[in-house]
Image (cartoon, rainbow, N blue to C red; front, side, top):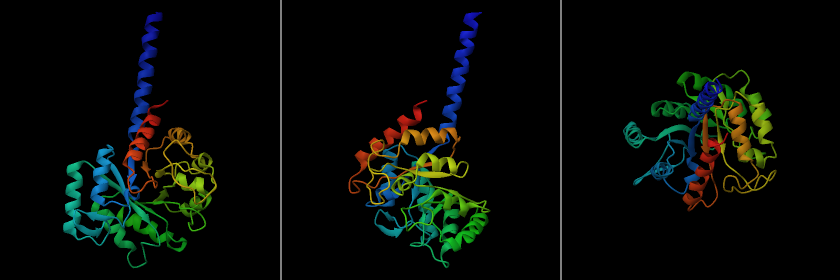
Length: 277
């Protein structure tokens, strides 16, 4: 009888571990290509493949490369768009988000073109920092094009959404919008990351996963994952508690001219964290 219960326990624990792995597989590991802004879009794709990362969040000013000075944005012809889609399918990489779209990129005249481009390219999210008066228009276009808008944050005072309370206020009554915070910028802004995540439970569709050297210093530099003040293991733990199923978009702004060695370490750190129980 004892032997029987022993094997029942083993099966239960195995099922629990399998269930946990299944949940974690829904975390789409991505790279925000600003990490590689000294390189082209196609070079960023190659670097992602080298890191075995299958998703990208692409900023709209990144040059395509391969001799093409065009930016990854709505101005691309359908011929170039189709070429990119075909190439990405061949190499097994998906552009899951376009952004961050803020006042440096969008105007009232071109905003809809970003949504049309995202829809054409099969991009699920636009990460954005809209001006306050433009929130309803972002939500309307998100509904029309079925492309979700996720609010991002940069350091204060320039960002409207530097504090989670402001982001939550912006999301009220806007069903096609969620949050895509930058935990490094939260630390820079003096925001307690774990408490902010708890406040935004159910609203976080993705996040910028990074680490920074100092808390409460908007000018502090990025550092290798696990070497700074962001307590990334606690972030992973909180995501697990929330049953998060969104996008983890790694971003790293140090050693920008030659950061692949660091990104190998960062990716390794992340993978080690999600294996822990």
